[in-house]
Image (cartoon, rainbow, N blue to C red; front, side, top):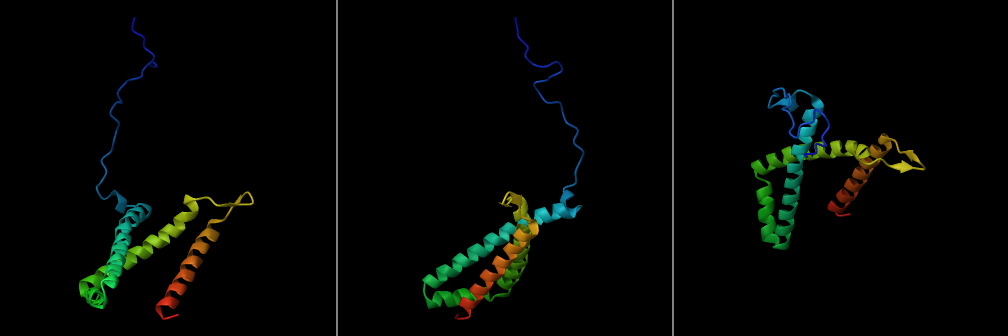
Length: 141
């Protein structure tokens, strides 16, 4: 005899769900969705900055002429425009990341959750401090 362990009304296959048509541009209709998509897109520009930094290190390791050629390339209008757009996206990435950090990781101190504002403020303070140290080194510290 065939045993049927399934609950009454259970189907092995899911019935087709009702799925309303959604525009391809659904993410443009609400700021939180747009911000999410822009943040994901910004990771491409973060990667671009990493690649440019690696190219700069490569040029440095190949001597003064290679570095001079790299600097000449960096001064071209297309690269300057790309770097300007990249800088805006990287700033957006950093700001949104700092505001996501307290939600992604709940920090507890003495059994109580640390306020989000304190974590975000600490992120910004560290960013400013590191930027000051880097600027100091670049200016000949």
